[in-house]
Amino acid sequence: MKKIVLASGSPRRREILKNLGLDFEVLVSDADESKIDKKTVSPPLYVQELALLKAVSVAEKLKNKNALIISADTIVCLDGQILGKPKDDEDAAAMLSMLSGKCHSVFSGICVMDAKTLKSVCAKEETKVYFKELTPEKIKDYVKTGEPSDKAGAYAVQGIGALFTEKVDGDFFNVIGLPVKKLFDILEKEFEFDIFKELK
Image (cartoon, rainbow, N blue to C red; front, side, top):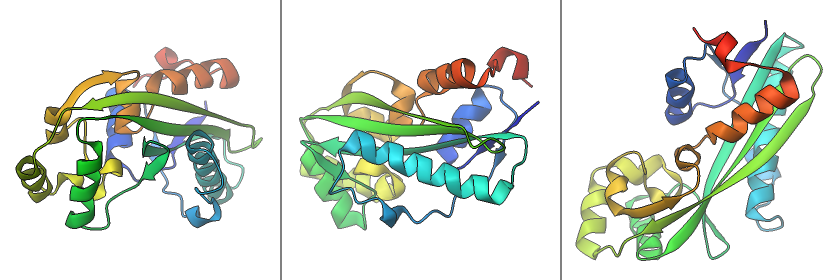
């Protein structure tokens, strides 16, 4: 039986896999993400390349162990502009002002890699998120909570940021950071991994 290794330090991704009842280990990638230039590739390709980069980094650490590596990267994209994690509170407020009253896309790239054979399958998922109009006061109050500080696009749809979202069109888990349906389609179809046989 192959081990599942999550190549991410994200507590949100860990929680998603844990809630699915999977037994897995966490091995955080130390890949140099600056190798992928987001200015020269489209957002959907950018997240897939980052996910592959992370998987390769962890595969090198595992040294041919019998394991399946799951890696992912998630970005918020508004009118073609990628919004990463805010640098500070001012940056977070600026991002939220940009998102106010608009629809934006959340792209996740995922990669599943067999650590022994190095077979890898990457995919992307897009979810549309519609924000209501936000007043400067509401933005300021939200930033004060600290929730936006380590989130792409400066909000958490599963947290207080849910109060700002009018509608989510697509995979909700994708917005949190891991497109569950797409991931398990890949595991089942490409790696013959049946989640129901692996439940703890």
